Length: 255
Image: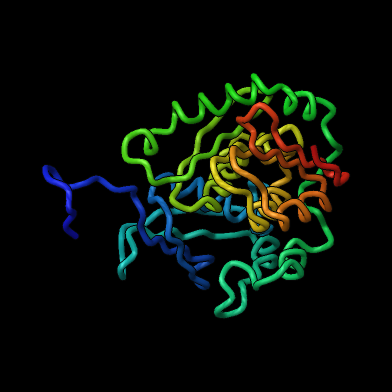
């Protein structure tokens, strides 16, 4: 495609079609940033409630391009994990429309939730520290700094920024952060996900399934995200880089 700008061809954000095949059977595709795909796949399976422990992944292999897909992944799940796989109805996308479908997707079990961390509220109330996390996250975001056009996320563990994730899909940013934490063994109520984008209901469901303590965004959560989070013990923080952030605690009160 040509551009209306003079000089060298414009560099755009990387996006490609990726196919994932489970146990040599079910296949589905993503449109995503085609980097660190194994981390993305692991996180996606955790956030979909399919995988709960590392030993439930028997094999994960990346293959070359085929049939119009830029890359392909083969994932072999242990039987107990494969039994949790419930593909969405045809034509429904990731979830059917409406809050009832989101709650049905989450189920009665809130996922990997544990006792609320007493340190979490103190960390999130420290505006200078939160602002520092965001500055470091954006400084380390290589795609954002070079071409832009991607969403950015950060994994905060023990009060420090441990990983940075970038993707053209804001939902896949959550998956990538969960994948990094899953590999590190740091998923838990002390874990915080930073996000550059609005927090949707589906992103809140993913975070609940992963069992993290908080989603913190420079943007805002949706009403559905706040409902999901409040019902399942997830803390949300909106407008986190502003002087007066918006806090949504699990009990339902907002500040």
